[in-house]
Length: 202
Length: 319
Image 1 (cartoon, rainbow over the protein chains, first blue to last red):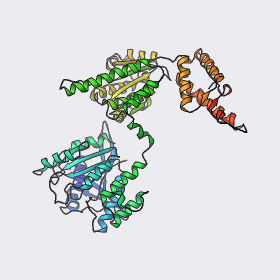
Image 2: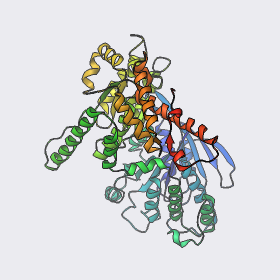
Image 3: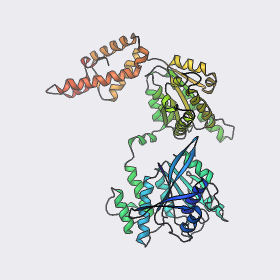
Image 4: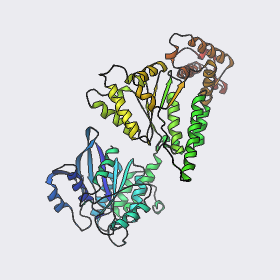
């Protein structure tokens, strides 16, 4: 099974995307596999509504363990299974909390084993400087790293917010040459393009 | 960024530790990973840095194949002019470059296909320029519906490059009910859909390919480029042999050359000559000769540099 990993800075909307994308592909109840930093694993079945309320938060660093679900992506006449993985968010500097640092280290391991990387950037915050999800050095470093991967796309999220258009244009300028898909994880916009991209790379 | 770190990084767990200890930022860790990965890049990717001149030179060095060389020059000129036209804001049309290669085994069909892929990448005609080599078994499935999916999978793999179907005529055997037909239909559809980003090459024996095209008359018009790969003459085969040993830093003794030539003449009279594999036959003879030379030398007490280089007539034998 191919691995598709969502990465990006903290608070850009990775977990919300995971849940809504799964719902978009027809998954009614999510079977989420949690992998904790110590290596222990747990699996839980929840509906997407409760998932959003319990897993998504406005505060940064809500996700501190690896959350993975298995999805069926329709390809041609058949379907293919992929593992969609949600990860702990990145930050530009060094985080004071060792727990967060461990979570990021775990994320890096996952990234290195992944076939497809969906790099999420907050289009709304792209033009602003001070938000935790603003465009940062780490975004460029991710783009640089991801060149060695076959499937790499940038998802410009939060396109529903006013001013996100401008941010999207900035992202296009900064990361020209990469595949960039504008989406709204909240309103499930642009998901068709993401599906096509994933399908083409597995 | 990596200079910040005093010790050298040679395994990923070191990077993880530094990250957890708070010595580096996540971004720096990523940069280190990509540097680490870069060391491991296999040699094949080095080829990507070959320039168009290198690839053209490689093609020019191939013995014979004058038609192919001419065709490539045509396509290259056309691509250049198209680019100029685009700059002048004139209409440009993507070229349909699907091809049929007809010829016996060992006449260079696969070699040329691989080179074309690289070349077209440099000319900006193809995005990736890789060659996906398939045969009937890779395309045709076992039950209804399976074939379309299998064929489409191969097409997807080949997007941005060349889909090279060897022994393509085998898709046409087995009549109406055979799944080969389904594969052809899927292929034809894909050739239309991805005409900017995919080149399909059908290859096979000349007579069989002719029959195949007669059974599927619609195909001929979809493959505007048809190239015949003629059998190599003995002279050409000798040139190929000389080049092959030169590449491997060996040389034939004059007597060995005579023996090889005689062997090739005799093989041409063989009833199965078209199955023997032309240039491939030469390669096999040479590889065998190298092994026999080695066997001859290990028995020797003193081995000179000359001995290591030379292939003698006694080394050369039929495969």
